[in-house]
Image (cartoon, rainbow, N blue to C red; front, side):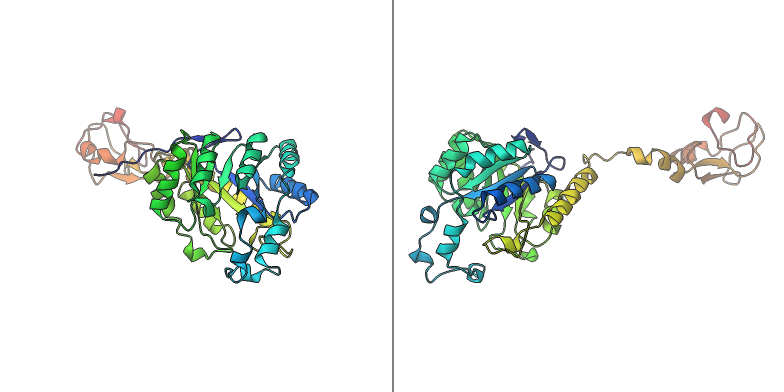
Length: 355
């Protein structure tokens, strides 16, 4: 059976309506780039606001609640192998103290920017409820953590669901788990779970596929270099763009090296906002900028020699010329052979009143 396209439901985050092609929600993923310094965390929130981000997002986890120390003693990914510390020690040093939720939420509010986190355990999720976070980000690694998905759904808050390293079937199951709580405020975030990810692995053409399959808005959590892929994702319907953000890529830490600095993030914001205005509404009709040039570029029927009253219009005495200030070309066959009712000067546009 043919599936007809359905416009995804509109979702609001922090009072901002997410609209395909028109309103992109930009998330500065500060993650663990605070380096366990709350003053750095505040500074990064302020920088994110200055760069045009709609939200500053952090990671809320404890090492013991997220990873097995023994499980990573002899196993790490290619990007983890570049860390100076062990996987366990890196996660410990990247923890965000739980009481920061209140302070950072208040500070973000004073800067008029949204604050929320990716909660990696029940307690972190509870903190987001306590601070009345505008949204909840579920990382790709928890797409099959149905207990956490269910609890997140029960908060009735908008959920940004990371779908990296997953199949459509896994996404469908996760969506159904959240929807089973009565929560349909879901944005599906496509991403590639590698840090950084290769541009040629981005597969952003999956965005309209997921949007149509689940009748949900989509977005892109981008780990690739630069802003090309993120900006292109907007042209394919992304309503949320998430990018890692730091003030110094040379700092030690798991996320700094593949994060955008303020100059780069600001340029991305400018490019995306400019693209939004260029995408328009999809209705093919002359725009304001064309009202004058339409007349200048199109043709109309002109006399190419003097024509006396009572003479007929022929291919020898009229021609289609610019601008379009006479009878339109589509009436050429109707006009040829008609008798003129008054003298027409050479180079004068032919009007209906003349025939």
